[in-house]
Image (cartoon, rainbow, N blue to C red; front, side, top):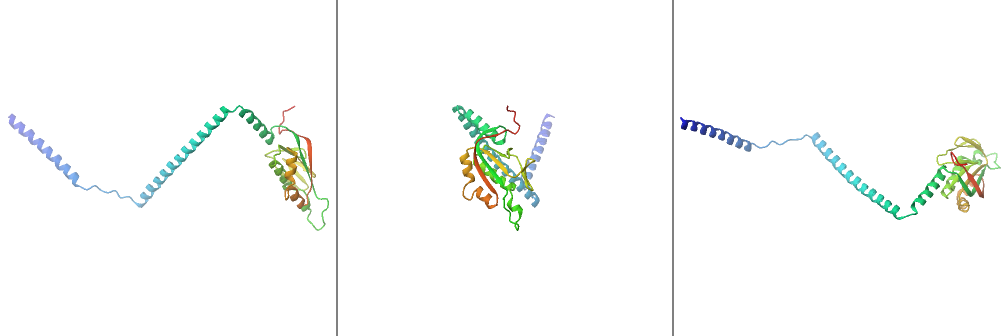
Length: 233
C-alpha cells in the first residue's frame, strides 16, 4: 500500500514538472511583440524630450548664475571687512542720491540760464517759431544734469526726477504749476563745468539760438533749493 502511494506522488510530481517545462519552452519560443507608436505619439515623445533638455540647460545656467552671485557677495564682504572707509563713502553716496531725487535740500554755487521769447517776430513767420517751448527747457535741464548738477529749479520751483513739463500756449507747466516767460533755470554745481557744457560748439546754446530763443547764462555764488517735503528748520 505504501509503495502504491509513493508511485502516485512521484507520478504527480513528474506531471507537474513536465507541465512547467512545456510552459516555459512555449514562452521562450514565442517572439516578443513590438509596440508600434503612431506619428502623434512620436511627436509628443520628441516634444517632451526637448522640454526636458531645455529645463536641464536652464538649470545649468541658473546654477552658474548662482555661483557668480555667491562669488560677488563674497567679494563684497571681503571688501567691507578690509576697508574702514566704505561706510562713510556709502553714506556720502546716499546723500548725493537723495539730493538728486529731491529728498534733501541743496545749497551752493551754480549757474542760471534765462530763456526768453524772441523780441522780434517777422510778420510773415509763425509766432510759435519764436517762443520758448518745453523741449527747449528739457534741453537745458538734461545738459545741466549730464554736467553734474546736484539740483535744478525752474523759476524757483525745484525740478525732480519724476517731474513733468508741458507747454500751454505762452506758459510752461511744471508739475501742474504754470510759469510765464522768461524761464529762469537754476542749477547747483560746479559753475565752470556747467557753463562750459552749455557753451560747447554746436551745443545747447547754439541750438537754442538757432531756434530763435534768447539765452543768457550767468554764474551764481549762492543758490538754495529746498527738498520736496522738507522738514528741515
